[in-house]
Image (cartoon, rainbow, N blue to C red; front, side):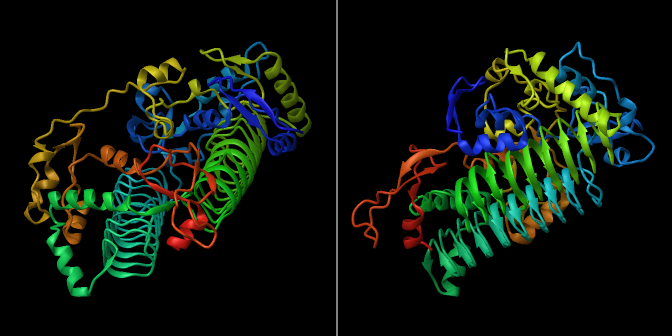
Length: 575
């Protein structure tokens, strides 16, 4: 089938459905989408709360639960341990399908009835009570969307790290601080996109470097200071002069380093070891079209945050992988997800699911919620194989003849993901606000929810501006202080493990609260939007004498200050 241009029923902009898309829709037996890919991504993201946690009460035991769901959401929650117990079964919430009502309103009714896992953590966390979306955390505090983290705090989207603080998108790192999008780093602080680095500070895109400061695009170097090679003695002297144990010294170093970074070219796409990919933050992958934050994947289109290797042959899936195969319009599904579509939080080991949420080890289920080890279920009721197939067919037909209409008039037939207005999270609570930031008024205008949750406001007894400039002057009683964030004025505290780490590394106390520090790191991450641009290289290379003529799609907008090169020119100058 040839390409077709459609008008998105959400943003009203034109979008193109390619022949490869039509082939996949035919394979999955779904109709073409009515939302463009960015609006589909936005809609799925509304169902993901990665790091906003609340105290709630278990419906089962009455105990306090650290939860992804606020009390105001009216979502029934169990603690994760209670949810996995065998003394209850989500099948008790089963019901018949009512052909006089729309499908999506009926599914929403069951979704707000069945108990949810409070913090969506798998078994295996040890002495890590205040974590969400995490597994096998040990002695960790406020880590979000992580696995196998030990003695870490304030980290998100990170895995297999030890004694790391305030970092995002890192893997296999140790004793690191304020690190972004980095792998296998040791004692690497205030740095971005580094691999296999040790004792590196305020550096970007370095690999295999040791004892470097303020460096860019270096490989296998040591004792470099702003890309200048120094002796070991001169390097140590230069570092000492910066007074990095002080807040003023660190902030001046950060400002100088970030200005220095802009003098060097960057590649149009951030990623390595790829074949035929289009998007941003893609590595070790092939045949990726409009991908964003993808690792170790094959044959994906319009997919995001597949940071666990193993996703393949899928379209429009957001968050996870590890592995998932032949999936469409899923959010937070993985760990063995096969031939499933329109699902949320289905893991591990699920096959042939449609319109399901929070399923584990299930197969051939439709429109079910919170089931474990089940087959041939619809709306949490058991059917025979023949009954299941017949009823499923009738419901799909009814979804088309009696579609759901949301509060903005958007039509939801079979083939649409769940309406954003049915998400248990507000726009400002879910990750959609990270990818598509909007003001409250615009959010409500577009038909999304907004959480006006009254957070507990603790009375502060210290202002961030009053903190000692040097870590050497900080007293032990700082852990008992409630500090007013320099930016938002909300209270935050310094935990003992954090204080011990900062003293050990000779780094000053943070002046911002956890949320503001996260927002500062997130500002380093480009959005998924791509722009058509021309290579900015004007140096003489074997393949061009004057200005390079190569063009590409990149996440760097033309208005940004970075020097953006095509891969050929970048490799000639940097690799």
